Image 1 (tube, rainbow, N blue to C red):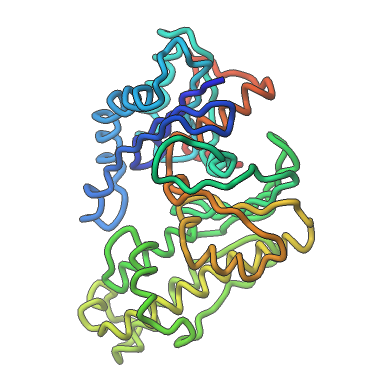
Image 2: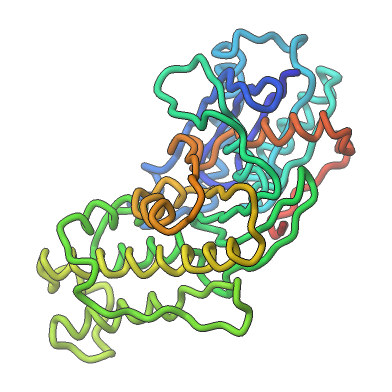
Length: 353
């Protein structure tokens, strides 16, 4: 069984072919990140226009790389939410058109759930991938961390899951981006802060962790504000000092120590909740998913604190990609999940788990 996955929820135009829910045949991603970097974040209109230009070439290349013809496909899986409305629209309309023209079943995929399924890919002939040796077992605890999402979910089986907790404000990746801007580091913030943190002391500054009534929910707005106040304090200025002027006043040692302290506490925040959930539910496996799942600091903290081994997927499959969408599509076929109507499927930018 071969499924073509199409992903356009944000700034990556991605397509991939996955076989039998575990074998990666192709994975093509065209990113417009360079266009957004000068603005310090994603510009929705630019992202949508980039998808229009890239979507057909990316799909064609995915089929070429997979050595797969249209007649050898068993279906198309496409992200219909959550994400940016204009971006989602390009992927969904393209998938709908192909499904009608090629008479292929269409499967609507939840982007956040799709991230979890990147961990089910265990085999590929493509070069440059380091994949888990085996698929995770159920029940499965999933920490989903990215620029748009911070969620903790328990999967009892395929299509049988419940959300344990989610962020009340910023997603963790968004907090990284905002702190990077305070420090004058390049977008995206996660990798930039990770690099800068290597030169700093992660215990140099005490930063707060949010205390919430719901034990599995998250909050990062307070931590982000604490970093802003700390940076203002380090240069001897009051709370009214403009954040845009901080980078030119902070020296490199201050930036490194703030980056290292923030990274440690932000990662500890999600790891603390993950360990708490593990102790309560005793899952057979734990996985991390989403762009922040590529963080070496997150992987190290989890490896140090979890009592069971955890297998991490390749960092290239943590950020948005078509492979995770195609993989979830494979399981929708296997479990006889309902298909989407290619004549009426609409996007849902606010879709939740």
